[in-house]
Image: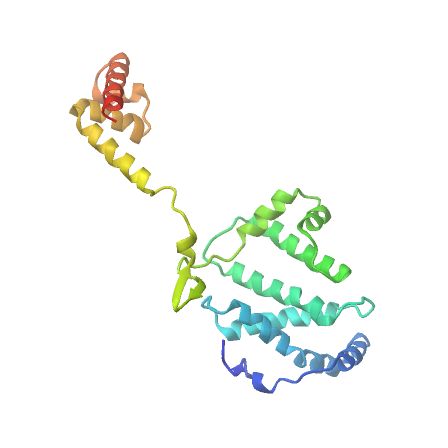
Length: 255
């Protein structure tokens, strides 16, 4: 991410345009001047460069992100409306971010259903459009209302396409010691209480006869019905039921 040259562009020598220069170039672009369009895009490459810094540490090549960001910049340039009292950067940033997020999601190892992706992409387009109209980031309720969908559906779709982060992602540093994401997550399935209960259950099962252990294993660990267990063991369903109840009664006493 600290490369000076990206995609053949020397980022240390990128031009900077003043507000007046941008407005003048935009007016020429609307008149169909291709040279003005080229100058304007090159004069805003620093904007792309600053945005791709947000995606550092994800294993993506800076060159790839820069190219995708440039696509967003070009779209913003071609669709920007001078009549709206909005800075170009305010309009362009969501467009560039949208292109980068779409790129990262399309190449994400975690697969998301097509319908959820379509809903999420639609929500992002609506957000970009509302941002362009209002000159500010819209609230989630406004996006859902514009899409004529429940807010919960929009939240679910947007959450589904979020980029995963590593459990070892540092989120805080103090005196050289890092605090990681995994340090803030509680494991409900592998708590000390669960571990002790599992250990007690194993010990209680050992108090039963081999037939009782097999019946409980088939019933509660493999999800078999009493009829299926009776057919496998070769006894009646009534006998299975009686043995099962007796075994559970013994285990309750032990536990």
